[in-house]
Length: 366
Image (cartoon, rainbow, N blue to C red):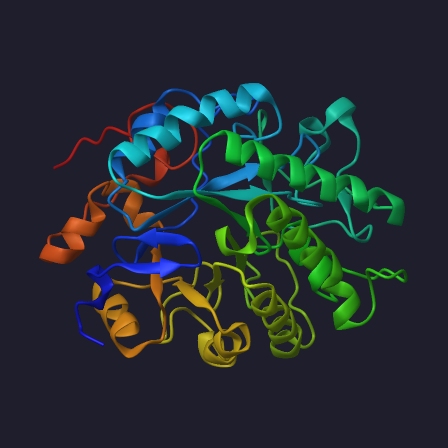
């Protein structure tokens, strides 16, 4: 394939994209505490519509699923009404946008839960790290173990969020099964100590993520559903790895491929590490291409890619698309800058989370 493959169109399931540069999901904490996006989000996503595919910031499927202050939701009519002009702005600029559906599981705090109740998880194991609350960064609260009978209710929350995503005008959805949140908590044997049909074997631990995908695909069709994985990530909440990450994730990827998903989006290596030439720190410890082969569908690579690595990865066939995260914060026109080899603006870290337009839709460039 040509070295310019990065800028050529392709197709992810039923979603046509005009280039192979995806905007990765980026939590920016600009929504209200009620989960309603502000009008700033219209400009923010519209400015970045030249990306082949925008994957929105992680979006809560329910109040229970929320783990961070000022993050958006998609479980009320008001949420739909706030997201709809965002999707219209992206489409008006010729872009494509999918919403990433999120349940944080144990990565939450009682102050963020309805009535101050405990967060839920596959097993009652407290997470490390911190979550962002109205009072600042605090350790996650001790979760309670979900009863088997409660899982059907969470599946329904995913189904309803998928329906609302369609009402809001998205082009599809991405299921968040990475970064130490609920679906990954079920998948990894380090965080899932259950003894029912959702725990124990790889097949049992993968059951809930697969059921979520089935519920969402019932609404959208599998060819408009993607899923994100981070097999080696321990960065959020110091999540321990699974004891057999290749075997576990290859099983899940194969099952997802059999379902005909639009794409698999993989964080290669450690979440915030450097790049070892395979997409991220530690990527050499995990055979991402074996995962891709098991899936047999469109593959989005993520983590530590710069322009040259992205060009090489798409030209060689390592990936069908490359997701960029932080570069999109300070460079709404990232696609054009990559095309022209123009310098990139480093957005100030202080404006990543919370605040207003500065550092979000407006930048003081030097």
